[in-house]
Length: 80
Image 1 (cartoon, one colour):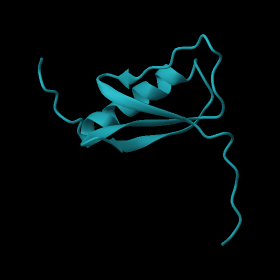
Image 2 (cartoon, helix red, strand yellow; image 1 turned 90 degrees about the vertical axis):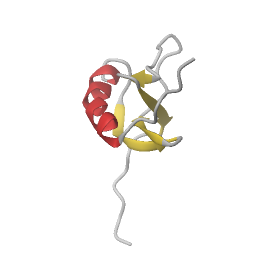
Image 3 (cartoon, helix red, strand yellow; image 1 turned 120 degrees about the vertical axis):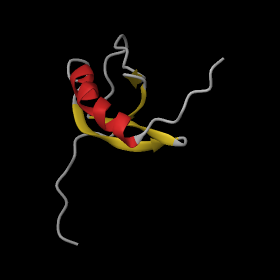
C-alpha cells in the first residue's frame, strides 16, 4: 500500500472549480472554499440543505478530499 502525500494548497486550488461543477447539479451550494484536512488541504463545500436521500455526493475531486457541511441559507450580518 502506497503512502499518499498530503494535498498541497495548489492542488486544492486547482480542484476548486471542478468541485463547483461537480456539486452544482447535485445540491444548492452556498459556499465553496479550501480548508485544512489532516496535514494537507481539501475542498470545503457548504450546502443550503441536505440533498435527497438517493443523491451521492463526491468525497474527492481529482484526488483532493472534499468536506461537506449543511449550513443553510447565508444571512447578511449587521454592523458589530
